[in-house]
Amino acid sequence: MAFARRMGRPIEYPFVKGIAGFPEVIEVRKLEHERHNFGGIWHSDTAYLQEPPMGSMLIAREVPPYGGDTEFASQYLAYEALSEGMKRLLDGMVAVNSSAKADVTRTREDMVKGETRELVAEHPVVRTHPETGRKALYVNVGHTVRFRGMTEQESAPLLEFLFRHQVKLEFTCRFHWEVGSIAFWDNRCTQHNPVNDYHGHRRVMHRITLAGDKPR
Image (tube, rainbow, N blue to C red; front, side, top):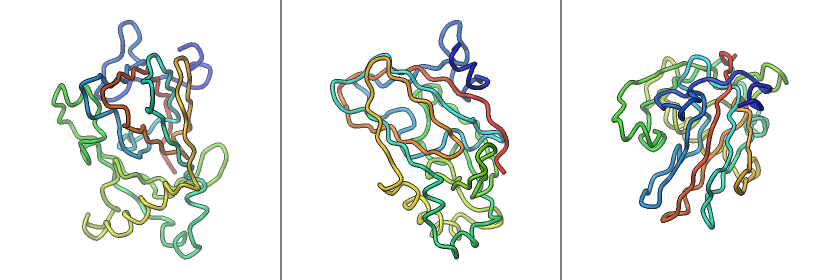
């Protein structure tokens, strides 16, 4: 928590209660008998908030004997690899993001509680990083439902192309966890995917989310 406060302002995670004494720290765990993991799909954290987080921190407490890596994808590189025609098409478009899009992105605690509240936010399809000034794709398969002014059916072909494009291998890296490992990523230009390949084993992490601003 002390380290996180030097990097930004820790905030509570939607829907999930923090650990005892530390409301901004949540436990991310998959138990031996469970088949689904926390946020088990490519995504950018909580894009359904009006002000999505600047970054996320994760520290490994217990790791499986194999598997459980996390993949990351640069959305700077994904945007820069698009054709000039596609960049012009996407410029000015706005995406509608919902917390209710896919059950697979719901947290373990959501599923236990049966949380039904839906959060919706609209953000630019291409956002400009407030510190670097670089442009990054800002849609994700976990939360983006459609484009503003268009139906889901009309939006689907272009969104499906973007979802495939933005996680191409050449834009990605893979992080292997050990007990005590810390990952800290910039949610404004990065997507991540926790690989669910360790069924029958336990994986326990602690996570802190840092406040961000409204994408522009």
